[in-house]
Image: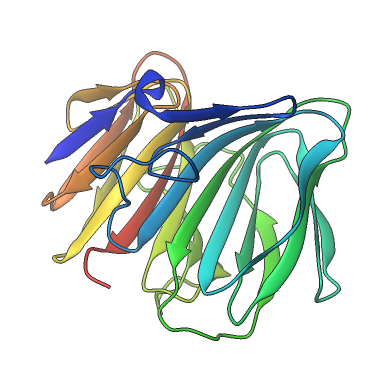
Length: 236
């Protein structure tokens, strides 16, 4: 079963510096039908104004993955980590036993990003932060693994959960496939362009929940497209 949610159907919040849309219940947006998908708890589509951002605040026992689509985000935390993640790159923060961090747009343009939260496999891991590069060239055949807690996903940023964050650009008219093992599900968001997933169209910034499907074929419709997909266990 594939359930498609259009961008206009997402929860929303806006103030003077943040324009946020929520694929799942978050903050003041609560929908009992959209409480996450297995270990995936949050997927926010954020636009952050120049020289603004999230002031220091705390998290624990959550794997927080950020994919920057435009601009850059500067991370700083109480562990002494400081780093800038540019458009096209990915950062991972394992909140573990507790971390206090800020995420600021220090640029002169809007920063646009996906913020993805995945529940950890157990409490009180050592907190950590890391960053890596999202594939710039179109992928062939399959999406690239960006962050993962699965044993066989070498080269991916590490997270503490049997889950994987994948992504890639797909050339117009080309397709990639993704296999979903029994007991697992996936959620995919189109960050650019539009795609068909097993024949159903998903527009720009739309999401699709994929449950009880052994394999999906993702095809770029008219122009080159970019997607991000999270593969998670349904039971945690």
